Length: 468
Image (cartoon, rainbow, N blue to C red; front, side):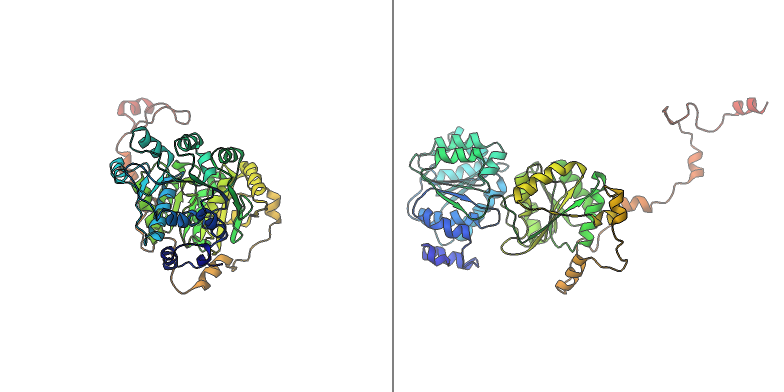
């Protein structure tokens, strides 16, 4: 099937062809015709399937006829995160270049003044996160009575982030006769209840079993002690043929600490997490996309929807707390038919999380134990360590061989011309002059490991007494 078979306009087909696409993905092929027929739909598709274009393309043709009015958007797309909203906006700009449609992006972390000005002019497409939308609505800056088309994207992520009450409130303010599309990777009961409440006889489209992992991604687990993760990540980045990688951590503080540690070790690393303002987050993403940095340390704010081409590895520094997040994290690699590698660090306490992920994905993920000895981490079982065959000293890692054979273009993970790191400066600092140090008395505070009393030169009167 070709895009030309889906009923899209000639102008839109030209934009799609200019973007380099000819054949639709399964979700696009099944969703676009009913959307053009103004039907409500529920789309269940895993990440990386082209879901965004399945509603952006038909919306452009639907909205091509009509006129926008001040503060009354004609359509609304709700996204759970700023990054996803910005990415949908990029899709509208790319595919709608041959149409005269106006668009506004309502997200937190940026100036509200410019957003209000855009609304005052009138917009055909409003892309928003629930929080900023509700804020502007409460201020009287938006009228929802003219919205004819609603898209609720990443509905299960909305549920995880606690946005369902906001979604219900927003839906209640829209016209009852609107067209509604709901997209989600999974369909938990609260999302099913939401769809029953606000969609009218929707067409159900499912292109794959919910929460299945991309089969083009090579997945593995590596057992490691909690204190051995830093050493292991450096070992992997040096020896696994990593070209570009996203490293996921559960906590924002861990993202910051890991990024700083990798930079000190000479890697071109950046970071993205929820504590950063929007401009900083977008700047880091642009650096990663352009190749200025090739390692991105991230929290789950980057786990869903971000379409970054050429990510060779996804590394779960921490195993995700929710099994659905595992699917979305590893989906940042192996996109658009390419292959990818996903590696997850696990500790003794992660057994329950591993079981939940394997139950959700319906597959058993291989455990790599040989990396433990190389990274200096003690195996969980001494018997396993004794039974493990010794690796020949001259054996090259398979990933390193594949990397060497891939092409002649030089690749680097660490900076080629890095400056001395603080750790190196400490190691290379000359030893202090003990004679000079001894000339200056010092007092050692009392502690359980130190004797009480004077620690400086012996006073002359005390020496005279001792000589007696």
